[in-house]
Structure formats: structure tokens, C-alpha cells
Image (cartoon, rainbow over all chains, first blue to last red; front, side, top):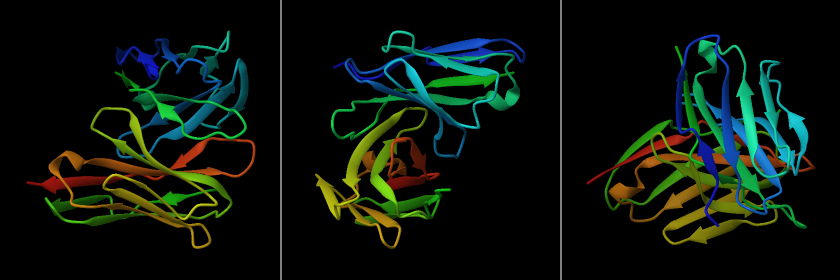
Length: 115
Length: 113
């Protein structure tokens, strides 16, 4: 169990560019979540997957955002035509659903700065 | 809509002090409540999770309590140390199929040597 990993850890981009982030959950965890955290705020839910199925998307996830988990393992979050307001920490978390879900384990995050 | 509030936003205490961090939530139909720690620029570390049927959980110098009916939780830290300096976030998961967490803004704790 190596924990949740995210890549890259930091990304600086110019407004209008596309960016893609990757999350590798704890192996065997079947649920994967994306959250966004801006300075001084708590994380806000964006979307989550159970295996490869995307079960819910927040209203925060505009049509410029897309997330995938094609094989039910790692996930990618893509932001198209980035805006300065997209600057934030993007956090990934995973959990295991058996008969009762417990803790969500968070990765170190990807910090995005849009210039 | 669930709202989670943590007041104050920041707290500074001398080393060795026992302290209580507060969290309140508006919708009592929760599945569980978690306390997390976040160091600057880092991800979240889960400290304690309390199921809705439980009243408290303990881990080392930390004790978390839950009063679901009044929409409150407290995190008690005994004998605080400078290494406890961090932001402490409270998050609730509502009952039902959706397991997303709703977070407070956090309390930034500074423990002075």
C-alpha cells in the first residue's frame, strides 16, 4: 500500500492552455474522488467514480472539465481552455466499498497556477 | 444543502495547552464525520472518523466527539506540541448513496514553543 499518488505535483500554465492531471488510487480501492481546494477554503467535491463509472459530477465541474477512469484504476482530470479562476489545489482521494465505506484517503494534490 | 462551519479560523496557543476545535453542520442526516490535518501545501491526513452511531473516537492525544442531534463535533488535543501546528479540517458525509464529503474551511492552529 503506497498511498494515493498524484502527478504532477505542480503545474504552471498560461490562460487558454489545456492541462491534464493524473491520480493513482490505493490499489484495490474501487471509489475515486476529485476535489478542488482554493486558498483559505476547504476542499470542494468535483466528481467521483465507482470502478470505471462516473456516478456524480458537481455543478463546479463546468463543460471545460472532464474526468475519466477508463479501467477502474487510475483517473485523469483534464481542464480545457484554462482560466485564472481555475488556479487551485486539485486533490484526489480513494476508498474501498465493501459492505461499509469508511475513510477516504487523500493524495498530496496537484497545485495549478494559471497565469 | 449541508454547510459545515469551523470557528475561529485561526488559533494560537502555548505549548502544553489542552485545546478544543469546534465544528458545526446544518444537516444532521450524516453518515459519518471525519477530522483531517493539512500541513501547508500538502494533502489531507485523516485523523479520526466517527460513524453517526458513535459518540466519540480516540487516537493518542486526540479525541473527537459527535453530537449529531445538535450538529456539533469537537476535536480535543491534549498537551499540544509545536508539531501539532497545521490546519484542521472537519468533513461530513451525508446519509445515502453519495459518499462525497462536505468540508469546513478549517482552523489553522499554531502551537508556540
